[in-house]
Every structure is written in C-alpha cells, then in structure tokens.
Length: 257
Ligand SMILES: [Zn+2]
Ligand SMILES: [Zn+2]
Image (cartoon, rainbow, N blue to C red):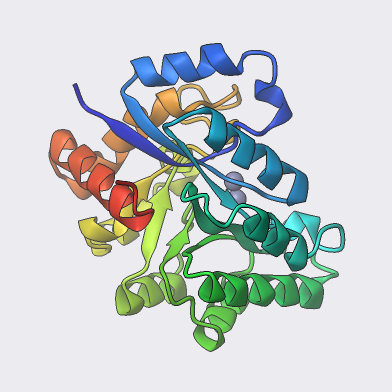
C-alpha cells in the first residue's frame, strides 16, 4: 500500500468538530501515516497542539495567518511555544505570510507580523510555513531581507517566476494541493516540471480546496492520492515513485522520526 503524509491540514477547524474521529479513521484507511496540523491564530494553534497531544500521528505548527492581523500577536505564539517547549511535536511556525486577496489596506501590519514570526522561527530553530496570496512581490522582498534559517515551505504553492526562481536558488520546499487539479491552474505544469522532485511535498489544506472531482465539498487528507496522481502526471513520472519521494521529503522537512 502506498502511504501519505498530509503536510497541511486544519483538523482544528470547526467543521470537523462533530466527526473528527470518523474522519481521521477514513484518512488512516486511505494510507495517511502522518498529518501536520496547522495553526492560524492563537486559539487554533492551541487546539492544534491539543490534537498533537491526543493523536500520535498528528504533528502541529503554531502561528498567525495574515487574516488575523490586529487580533493576535506574535508574542501569543511565542508564549504557546514556551509553555510547551519540551513538546517535540511542534514542528514549525505557520501558517504565516501575506494575503492581499482578503484585505489589502493593512499591508504594513501584515508585513510586520510576518517578519516578527520569521524572526521567532529563526530564534526557535523551526522552519516556517508560508501562506501567500496575491502578494508574491512583497513576499519575495520580505524573504530576501529576512531569511528563514531552518527551512521554508510555501504551502498551496501558486508559482510565479520570482517565487520559483527563489525556490530554485534557495532550495526551499513547496507543497502542492488540490488546486493543481483545477482547470484554471493548468499553467502550473510548466513550473512543476522545473522544480526538482526533492523540493516538493503534497498537502490538502483541508477542509478547503478539495481536488477535482470533489471540488466544493469538505476536503480531508483521504484525498491525497488524487493530488499525488496529478503531480505525477505533471512530472511525467511514475506515481509510486512520486509518492515515495514526497513522503520522504515531508519526513525530512518536519524532522519526523
Ligand atoms: Zn493558507
Ligand atoms: Zn491553511
């Protein structure tokens, strides 16, 4: 059986509250060995850490998403880390970044929070998980000036020339999700071919971004095989080879033993 690691899931989302156990059982049956559950503000980071304590195969990141600028502060995340600093299941700071599609009248505040969290990750020896939407130029600039020192993962990677060049130059990691199956993203193929296999992992971003033909429904990690297959198609590689590679890359990136 082929096995999978979901490098970006939100089982801390309300939508999973009533059927979490059943959903996770289905994921295990689909071959999902590990899940990296992602925090996006103070409350969801706390909840994600609880999930990591409860389930052996769930790891967590903690961080504040650009949507929560002005609500929570970087120090809130630092406090969570400090209160749990012996917990080896905190494997990254994220998701952090810029999102101008959601709000764009607070660019400076988004950038300040982003930079503060990169500095925190560097101080804590953790990698960063980056969310960037309609903000590739500023993301590029900030990352040039504030280099993450312990690994960088662009989640739900939306390739642009600048970002792909940065990924190739710096050896950063990218995660592809369900959106690579959408028709409007057919142009991703040219970029995907350019990025070396050792820099690619897969994710679901569940409950969001269900792959075709499930688009619009609640996504879960059980859909990883569809995403892996699409990635293999773009790479023109054998799907078993691709699944083994992304599995190994994910374990290495998050230092899962
Ligand atoms: Zn995101
Ligand atoms: Zn996310």
